[in-house]
Length: 322
Image 1 (tube, rainbow, N blue to C red):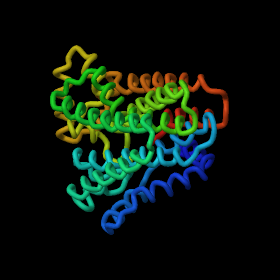
Image 2 (image 1 turned 45 degrees about the vertical axis):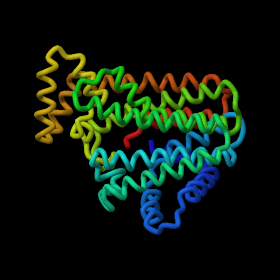
Image 3 (image 1 turned 135 degrees about the vertical axis):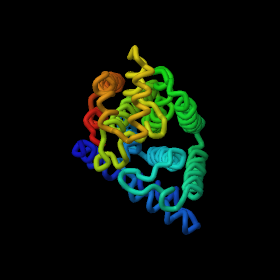
Image 4 (image 1 turned 120 degrees about the vertical axis):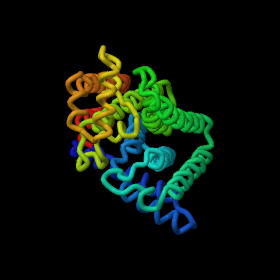
């Protein structure tokens, strides 16, 4: 699956160079420590999935431009800022296989760097000078916070319903991917199809989070860059667990077993519970369902190289191992 994401990146390589220049310029500070920490953050920036989607969607009906790159860099700043804060809240010390900012520099600086990135994204938002761009980004920022808090609220009771779960990941993950796609599209063309682009991103974002949920159950540190069962250790239920708990008659017994094995870091028996009771199969089915929903939104657009690359992005998520 690395081949797919690398192929997508190669097809828009010139655009990604310009995007990275915008991102670097946006984050530059007169404070040396800020630049030092952000250099580390950007060095391990990952797949650049959201900026790629933003650029690809801009090309569905034209060519990317300065507004596209400004949009892509703003979305990425919001994304990375939430990751920095998440790592502190979740007490995570590894991301993509590398020590987190809070592990190296401590929680206080990690939070402050996250705040700095949020403030710089606000600078970018102000420079749009366009009400629709501002509204999209402000609404996305609100949904990101609500999704995180909804997860924390429900993790304490271990009684999360599927409805609440999908609301949570829609806000926490899918909202930013949907915004990336919509902002990219309207940076070139503002018509009714912008809603289809946004829905495409939201559905793909849900499928993306569901895939991450499976990695938390099944993944290995060398593949995912973080320990397995991390969500469960943080008392955060994801769809594989929710399905098992909500569809078994002996819910109390299953829950007690999950708690027992979690305390003892008994990953083998935890995986067996999820496998044997259909949690993995159900989550895979939902990934497929939302992937098809994302694909259906692209049917509104004429066939093109960039539409094909967006379809490749769906396929990348379906088969990714990290």
